[in-house]
Length: 279
Ligand SMILES: Cn1cc(Nc2nc(NC3CCCCC3)c3c(C#N)c[nH]c3n2)cn1
Image (cartoon, rainbow, N blue to C red; front, top):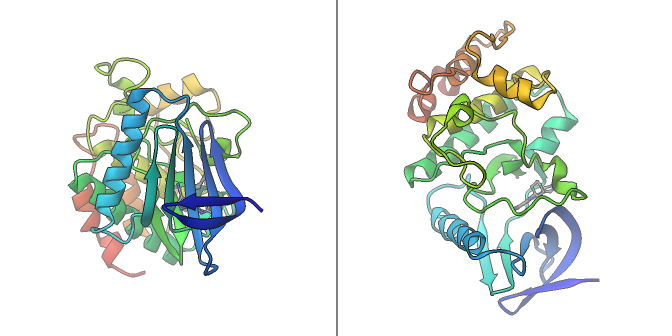
């Protein structure tokens, strides 16, 4: 059986969890049979800017360990010119897979997971990090609570079409905020528009919408161009079928406001009755 050695410690590979381009995530056991996730990144093909973006992501992940339990634990890492190994806590499942397996979510799980997501994103915002590509695959369930596994800093390594990570939602437009589509200032290609924190609020709103209605707001539009047009088209109404939880309905309507200036802030979401009033 294959093993991985990180900083002199040996880990036994149980299975590969995900693969994308030059990165792989393994489920491993240490000599005490403790479960971990190891993220391996092959840097042989990576340009200097990509290597820098990975080092930046790791520095932030390492630093933010101290500030919230909703950030995945990073126990150790090893960076050389040709590879990166990150030893992290292993989730039972990622939120995307969990959601796909069940279209409806029970109200208690939904509220708890929403609180976890808000805390994780609030933490990275407080440290000047805007994710700008939030989606369910960025969260994993660890002992019943959600943890953020990446900050959207490391460049997406060229997605490998045969990858199992393909359904890890790399490149999905379903969570993209209108301002990122309309933002003409950002040069094409590399730089995602990280214009403001409100973009992350829109994406979180799309995740909560999916946990409420079983699909994202623009899921039904399969043509990618038409989908982008609908996201920015203020005359295209987003449907909010009536539900018993009026606080939840208000959160959804407040997050999915196309004008980022009118959109609710993360701070206001943390004070919203939905989080504090039962049921
Ligand atoms: C499906 N599945 C996921 C787990 N758990 C898990 N998945 C992680 N990444 C997955 C890679 C593929 C796409 C979805 C996220 C990481 C991780 C990073 N990066 C750090 N810890 C983790 N734990 C168990 N089953």
